[in-house]
Image 1 (spheres, rainbow, N blue to C red):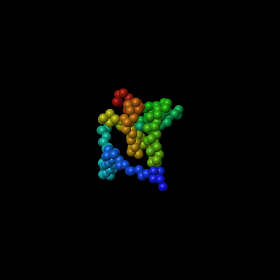
Image 2: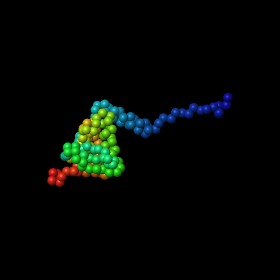
Image 3: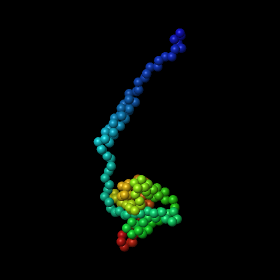
Image 4: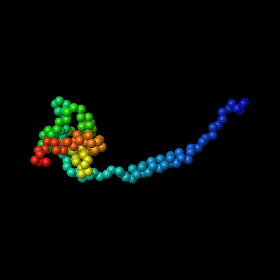
Amino acid sequence: MNTSTAPRAVPVQTLPAAVRLLGSLLLLVLLLVGWARWQGVTTHQPDAGTLWQRELHFRDGPTGEVLALDAQTGAQIASFQGEQGFLRSTLRALVRERKRAGIGAQAPLLLIGRSDGRLTLLDPATRQRIDLEAFGPTNVAVFAGLRQAGIEPSTR
């Protein structure tokens, strides 16, 4: 047999030291994160104090608009015409959680203004919350306008 045509064994090359070091570092980080989660370490920051809150109901109007109602008086305080994608999708997420829990639309949603300027939309029935500032100033403005909407100037 001719040995020049026989397949040769390719020597196994070891990984470069930099790759091994990077792999070890990644494994260490994953182990530390796992250990921290197992110990109950959390990154949740406490909420800033509540400056104001308003109880609201949202309903679909007869021509497809979204109506915002004051929960205490039942008065319509705003009407959102057209697409209103952010408003609709935000409310849809909260309604979906209520349906999963078998809860109706009787309980109002809370729009909460915090001392650090943030706005939170909270569903007390399901404890679901949406921190609105995460969606940018244009989307926050949709809900921020509901703070004083429908309130007489003499009672502000």
